[in-house]
Length: 291
Image (cartoon, rainbow, N blue to C red; front, side, top):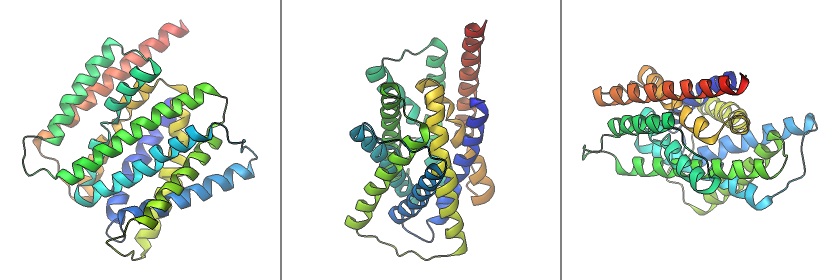
């Protein structure tokens, strides 16, 4: 069942990049982050209170740190990157997250890396190199820089989430609600302290984008992600998430006209093969455990 949830998460997260890119035509990156987060936070708290699943906040420092990395840093840096870069390339750069995540998981959580995962990491890294095209001097530095910061922030949040889930029995709904609340506070402070260069123009598309990003991609998406992290190893979940930018590249090509060049297509192929290696490695381990 966890793999069905993962597939659904890939679909809703991949299209959220296209939605965000179009939404930024009507608003600025920090305000869009604020709007999607406040909607998502309200929705998840209303739901969790209605089903009476809200637990008392434990480990407030760690949960606050989770919110600041998983929500505040991730969204603000990602939206800033989208201002200057295409949705497909930005999402792919942000999904260098698995490499940072594996480094942190190895250092802090002491997770080992299988031989198949090492091959997948190498293949994914080569694929990402083709997509980033560092040999091109005209590459947009600001977009790439903020995308990498978003990736590192997300990777840090994964390790923090694992530490929290390993230390105590806290339901995923409560953890997601509290981290989003802290993340919203971080974004709100950023919005209040940083001058906005563009005024928001409310339109029917912006309303749709805020609802999609806030309810589906943020509230539901982060809940599914934390659930998946609880059921899967960090390395497997992180590397498998590279399916998201692959689908985003196709979606942004169709809807935004961001046609990938030959190097980007080679990169997508290499990452797809790496994902297949991860899938075979994971399913073989599951069969050994259940045999």
